[in-house]
Length: 373
Ligand code: BGC
Image 1 (cartoon, rainbow, N blue to C red):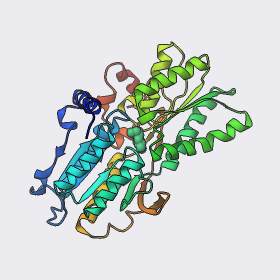
Image 2: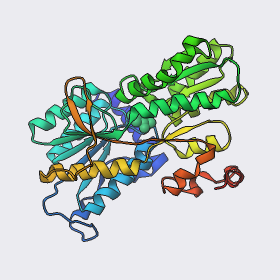
Image 3: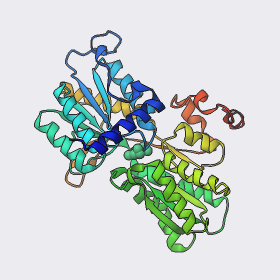
Image 4: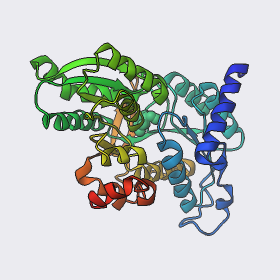
């Protein structure tokens, strides 16, 4: 059961979510009507109910702004009923949501875990009830998912490390670098960090760059990131020349702290190509982001979910690898991430991921024009 405190936190989270995204984006979101409509390309009689478990709204805007609508659209197109829940960062809520989805007849779950322990428990329970699980974006270590669908997260980390180095090389000298890592309970954080460090460590050891701060941000919480980065500035007497921020939200926290101290712009990295991240690139506050085409991730996951629910094999070539979850290899779909700087910012618009009117408003209008958008 929820403690009164966590129940209250959940209610507040829900209210914040409703403010930010509109009520429809926050609770459950049923697409059941689509099962009987003829709008879908292949209205299958055999594909069964699917449940999606999103993690939160504060670690990245991606989950509600991109994953939810894109998953909704993918299942609608296939004529498969889907219910999408968001756990608002609460592990016991996510466990209850999984339980409820199974009770309501879901045969496949897409899970973005809040940590591997709670994810593995959800998967074990699902398995005992004959329900298949797909690890969506985050791998559940020692879990029992049938598939893992994500991006090549090794590559994401490398792109961030190389992106920071490229941006810093324009300034010359021996830069002081701060690392603002994602949540330590997210397996992706481990992969990102290992791989930006594979680029940065040789520079640290040869004295070409200096690591002056290195901290994880619990739950990827942007507010906590702000405090952590303020403390990093305090401790280093503002002597930070570049920030490896693991996603756009964390990057924006660093940028806010720099601005609050009226410090000059320095290279800051990111990930997710969020509207805010792209605006920060346009204004020169952020140096790069990593674009992950969530539509492809949602499409791949929905295709696998449909195959699982029908008991058929997925289309040839869709599963393109396997990923070790420390106990076994999980058949995986790993998509390719792309680095974005001011020079190729067009990509995210041409791909239909972002719309100009959500980025190029107000003071960004002239910056967009200048960037050729
Ligand atoms: C995802 C990122 C996201 C972060 C915070 C990671 O697991 O891969 O895209 O920014 O979680 O939600």
